[in-house]
Amino acid sequence: MYALFSPLVDWGMRTFLIGIFALVCVILIAVVYSLSQNKDSTKTPDEDETFPKYF
Image (tube, rainbow, N blue to C red; front, side):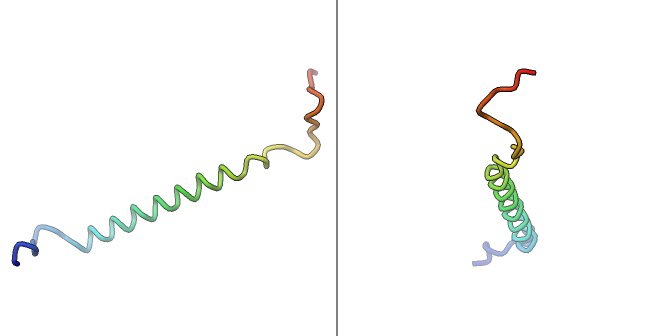
């Protein structure tokens, strides 16, 4: 029973680091999702796609 308690392990710090890692993962997923949804925003409304512009 005493083997579960080890003074060499800081359980609070481990929980804190796992929480920070999870937060960073959620933020990265949100950024990637946001970038994937904004594909049409790079086109301007005055661009005409039916005729190619050569000059």
